[in-house]
Length: 241
Image (cartoon, rainbow, N blue to C red):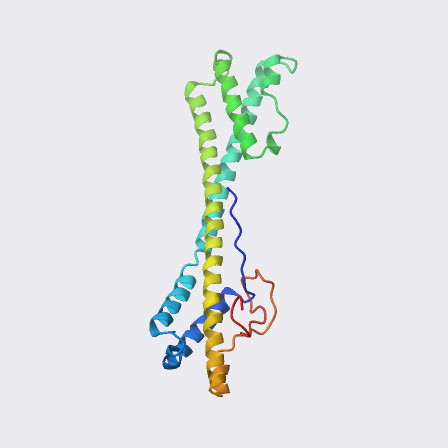
């Protein structure tokens, strides 16, 4: 599944976005009567505050990253178990056949250590099929139905772990995209309210109050940076203006 990437449409960090939104909402409440002249009521300010609180409280990336790392470690552990299982089977095959033997060549594979997850699962399942096909020979080498069932379960556990790892990666990708969309929505409102606040006081020739609404940061940062104080965000115009 390929997600359509959502692009972060501003240069400041998420932390700075929250800080600026909090500050702007506080000043807007001071000037709530003046904003009412431009169709912005207390309910609009409350909605703005709710948006930035939901944005900052909705950050679950740390938890999702921990889950992804745990799933990856579990998948890798089971992959090692499957590889060891295959190597043990290879030894058993070698013990009952010569290198020229047709059955040996059926089992033999020198690329086990290089297999990706899907290749390892496919090869392991095929190996179990071959053991079951030659079970009379392998029984003499100590391969019991219980052992075969254990081998099969190990493969299926590995397959499930691979799926869970991919799900954890997808969950984190989705959460990241959702956070970017919420941040963009918050940023648009921040720019809108800061622009109105700055210019309504410019009309009244109150430069000090107007300056309270200036959005700016101290140092540049790349557009997709999630940390630091990035970019010049002085509110010269409305978004899309």
